Amino acid sequence: QVQLVESGGGLVQAGGSLRLSCVASGSILRINYMGWDRQAPGKQRELVAQITNGGSTNYADSVKGRFTISRDNAKNKIYLQMDSLKPEDTAVYYCNAKNIFSVRYDYWGQGTQVPTSS
Image 1 (spheres, rainbow, N blue to C red):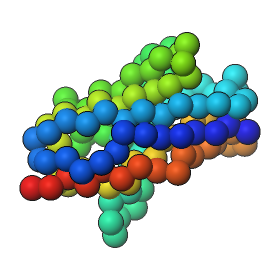
Image 2: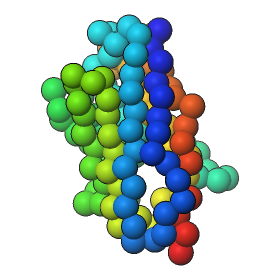
Image 3: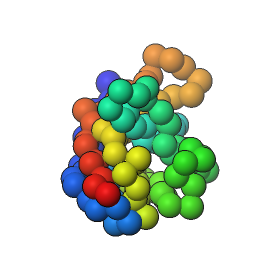
């Protein structure tokens, strides 16, 4: 089992910045992929950003150039730096950790809210 705990959410004005953190614990050796998804009110959950153990990253088109995902392997943490936030970024952000070669290892955090005011 892997436990994920997010932090850093909160109300922010449009144009502002926020940094989310997610710390992983437990059987993390099986994990080779971590990232952030989000779910806006009334919408489906969507991928925001991903990062592999090797540091390769992938972003949703809607956040490219504004959001940056990074990781600190020594602390088993990933971060999501969110700049130039827009009202449409308002969502609950979830940390995800998984093994892309096995569906058995797919874990989620409890989510952290990021309301963005216009």
